[in-house]
Image 1 (cartoon, rainbow, N blue to C red):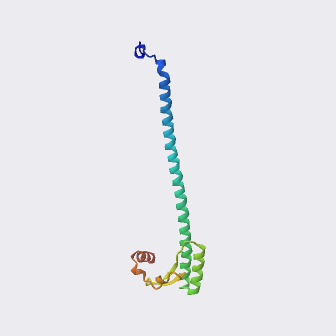
Image 2: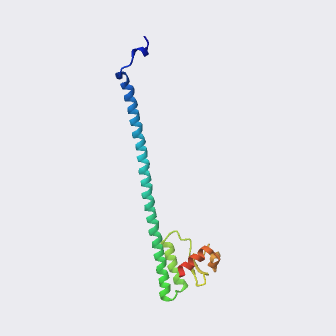
Image 3: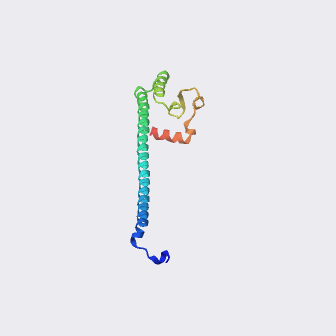
Length: 143
């Protein structure tokens, strides 16, 4: 009599079914943990991105406010002497890293003063009307 003639009882299949069930449950738990880990990483990245966005926004707003105070002083006094403008600009330039240059542009959109001048000489007396992007920005600001 061969193995097929004996007839298997349910008890003979229990180890195979148990092993298969445990393997399936293990695979499902592993897949779930991988998905949960990916979700947590994505949430962490989103939180970090939001933090960086807030930091950058705060820094930009701080710089805009500082330059706005300089503009307001100009308006109140009807202009400032060049040496005073350069002193203010030097302070802003040193206090707020990242500026390449700060320019004073007249009402005709000519760059008249630049700090620092060294390395930016080509921009001196440049008419911003010749640069469509900057011209449009200045038109919007002056309205």
